Length: 280
Image (cartoon, rainbow, N blue to C red; front, top):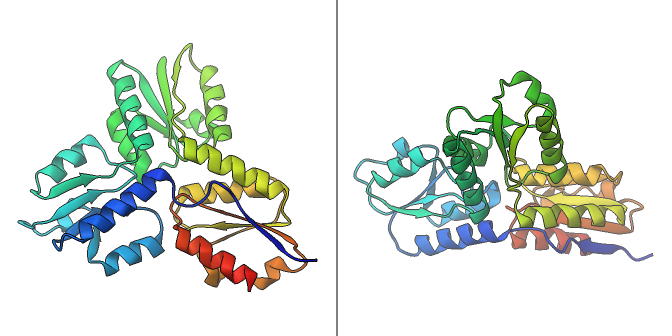
């Protein structure tokens, strides 16, 4: 029987990441120094490619030499308002590639805080995006990774809730359900991006009709990790790889239907390499 290889319709670079990546490539053409605050996307292959073009990633603004010229790119994950102001004071041309969906979450959190709500952010506490949203939400805000975390947090009578844009809908709703038991004044804002919803839905449906699932993406990518978890929940054997080199032929023994999906920070060329390897 011939092997069938199917790639999820919605997979790989989302619109926000693609925009940030193309912006960085365009900035590199200027010939002037280009810095990125943090990681443009959570994918080492993409970051390595940008580095070959002379784009330097810095963990903090203090790493940029005083009096430096050129451009500073704010990643698609976004940052807090204090960081934006500090970036402008460097004198560099600040290019903000914050994803529109992340911007929506930031603005929503800021508005809720201004209206007197304690903001609960459903997301990964160590993720750059979540840290940025937290700054917009103010000091009283709290990050909740799952509903079980709520027992450890002192919550106010008036609460607003937003989501990291790459959260699963199931986890967000589980936290919201628990919050409804804790307060009578809850303002709910589902800020999970449309691309994430479509990507996760497509991945699950593909996993259900596949013998094995391959999830392509960097180990540091939160949305890739979530895709893997969702595919595993269908009962289909699921493996996460960063590129074609990590493929294990043993995973494919006796498997005729191979499903492929990829995180939002995985470029097309990496997906193509995996597909080409499977066809060999």
